[in-house]
Length: 192
Image 1 (cartoon, rainbow, N blue to C red):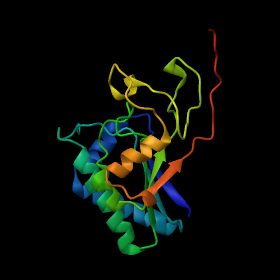
Image 2 (cartoon, rainbow, N blue to C red):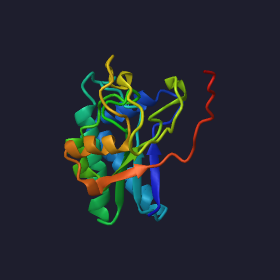
Image 3 (cartoon, helix red, strand yellow):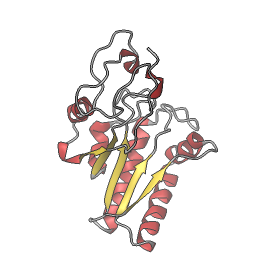
């Protein structure tokens, strides 16, 4: 399937733009309608939503963005599927609910109802700033890093298998989980 990817990778106030849409159900619906029009005009098969900079609380109304993301997903899904049930709706989502780079705005227990697939960004489990070398996308094994989970004591290994477990425990059907693969690596310097 050929889909458009919608992301919030802009240099000018990405949180403000996303928050403005999330704070207003009318703007959500306008976005969904415009997205449908774009997909139709360009003869595409659907959309992959890749919103990585959604703040925990909305800067427009001060309320939590978590239920707003579900409402936004629902509007996109219903608009696209209402026109063509074969349109594919996927969301790029973090590798863990506790991802230090993404605030906890992903209500997977509700969101899965409005997606055909979650493309889990299963890379950068280990980064250049982690202080040790290794694969940045372990399927099993991987680093045991407590600081990723906001704790001083490591509690679990950081890998794709554990990510899938978190999603399934949240209610996501396994057939809606896709492994997003980062086709790159790091050049490591080991001075010790």
